[in-house]
Length: 441
Image (cartoon, rainbow, N blue to C red; front, side, top):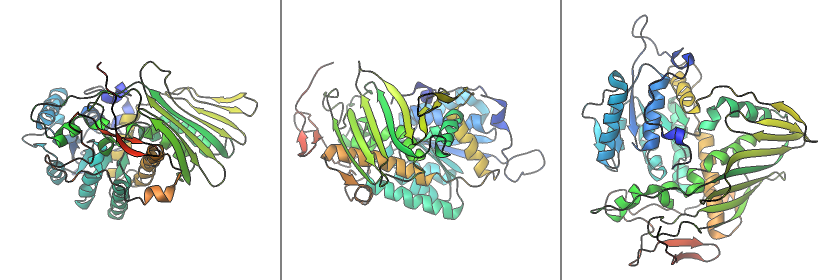
C-alpha cells in the first residue's frame, strides 16, 4: 500500500517528455484529428487516481468519462480531484458510481477501463469488460486464489479473440532500464539461468479502521490489503512484481514445484490486520534444476531491499532498480554496467496501451504473464500457509476459494472475527486457528 510513493501521486500535469504525445492515432475523424477515447476508472484509491493521471499524460485524446468505487465518497473525491487537475480532459458529469457492482456502469459507457479496485474483485470487472468488448488496463495482481486466476485466463483468451488490448500493471515490464537488463538475461548474456534471489523486503503496511455502520463485508473491503480474499496476502499484492521478474527470466515458463515457510509476527493487532502474514520465504523449482529463491517481508525496523539477482552458467545479473543494474562474469568482473535513462514506467505502460488501441503496434495482450505471475504468488502463499510442497498443477487447478458468500454489502467473508475480535490465521501443518496475541500501538 505504501511500497512505492511514486505510484500514489494523484495529479501531475507535467508532460514527462515529448515522446508521450507522439504517434498515437486511430483512423482520424478528418485530417489533423484523432479519435477521443472515453476512459473509465474503476477503483478510486491511490493507485486508481495514479493510473488516471498516467493515462491522461500518455495520450492527449484520452478523457476520463466515468468513475466508480465501492464507496461513493471516494469516487466523488476522485472525480473532483481529476476535474481540478485536468479541467477539459475530464468529462465525468453525473457518471460517478458507488457500490460493489458499480463497475458495470463504468464499463457500459466507456471505450477503455482502468481496473484498479481490490484484487479480489478484479476478475469480475475484467470478465465483464471483455464481454462488452472494451479495452482494459488491469492492475496487478489479477486474482487472490486459483479460481479467480483461471477466470482471468479465460477472459484474456476472449480478449485476444476479439482483438482487444489488455495491458498489465506489472509495470517493470515497461521500464526502460529493467527491460535492458532483463533482455540481456533472456538473451543469454549470463548463459542459462541456474538460480535467482527475488527480494521484496520492506516495512509494515497500514490498516484502515472500521466505521460505524459498516457491515463485516464493507469493513473488510475498506481495509482490503489485510485480508487474503481481497489482496491475496502481501506477497501476492506486492511481491508479485519481483516474482514476475523471475518468471520473465525463465521465458514466462512457471515453476514445477514450490515449498516455503511464513509467519505473522508483527501484524498482531486484531482485527485491524486481518488474516495475512508478514513474512514469507519460498523456493520455486524447475525440472532442469533451476531454483528461484523468494523472500518477502513487511516488518518495521528491519533491513529492506527490492531487488532481483540472477546467476547463470556464464555470469551474474543484478536487476537494479532505477537504472542501477549490471552484469558480471563468473570471476565477478563487471562486464556491463547500466547508464540510467529517464523512464516513467507508469506512464510508459499507458503509452503502449494507446499505441495498441490505435493500431500503431500489434495488439497487446499481457494476459498470459500477468496470470502466471499472480499464480506464482498464490502458489507461494499456499505452500507457506500449509507447510506442504505443492506442484504448479495442484496450485493452478485448486478449487480452494476465498470468495465471500456473495459480492454485496451483506455478503459474508470467508473469515470473520469471533466475539473477541480475533481472526482465524493459517498455521502450517495445522490449518486455521484463532490468533490470540494482541498489542496496542
